[in-house]
Amino acid sequence: MNKLILDYLKTDGESWPSSIYGERFRCSASLSDETFLPCVMLSKSDNMTELALRRFEDEKKGKGIFTFNSGDSYKKIVKHFVTSGNRLNHYDILKLEPTKYAPPLSLLKQIEGETTMAWTGWVFEMRNKKLFAYGTSFSMEFFGLPDSYTFDDVVAVHNHSYVSPTGELRSLTRGMCAQPEDYDKSLVYREKPYFNCFYDL
Image 1 (cartoon, rainbow, N blue to C red):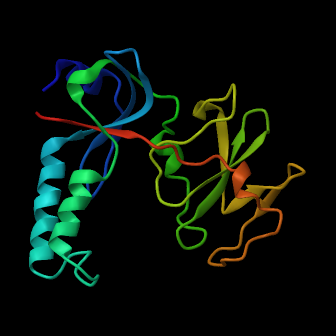
Image 2 (spheres, rainbow, N blue to C red):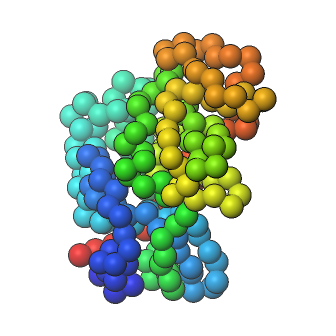
């Protein structure tokens, strides 16, 4: 294993468990060419390899996620694993550090599921009573932050809520596609894209 990654996992990494991908770790990475990536997920390569092999077999047996779509389902699942996602080579990393864009698991566990199909909306309340609307369609790993704040500033999570244009905390209706007219998703802090870096033990 890359010693840099091993050292990070021993000292700084908060485990991000996944029933699909296994144990993972969030961080930021500085690359050998001085590129800085604020959101990186470290994952065991064996876990992804085993997942791919299982999915390939499912498609061969007609039990996979692409089976009921038209076309070559086996080719589609191979394409998915080979060409999708952002990848980072471990040997290109010069330095790993904790990332400010990773909400602690203890905070994320307070968020109570989907508000509507494929959308979860909530509000973080900060120590100074400021309210910030958050939302995601599917990814909970990394999130944007208001300037000068960290996730340590969060003192309360208001589920299925948003912040009105006048700064008031308001509720979102669970299960309803139609939301309030003043619910502007462009003002919501969203999930951030990230790079996957795979390592071997």
